[in-house]
Image (cartoon, one colour):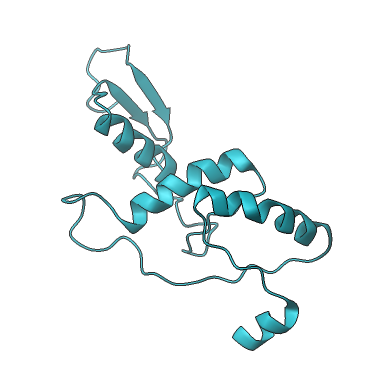
Length: 133
């Protein structure tokens, strides 16, 4: 491991330096932890960060624990700490996610929980979606 030297014990080891791993390391360091190892198999951190998201930040997920990971990461990306970067990390925009059938029913049930986690969501009818598009 580059820069690891002969050390083989750490207070925290984070596997993966994507958005979640990098955010986790940052927030742990803010809490005073300094003995953190982040391991990443790719050549650069965040290599696959937008590969499946079409470069959009979408906090909704059918798995509640994943939402609880995405929400703080999204807050970090929208409002990084002073001195973290010179340019904004995101351009604010909206996204429409369409579904039907059982998935739509699941989304309607999960939406109040997402809102409690801090996710801004608007459930639209098919005519409302058509009007927006």
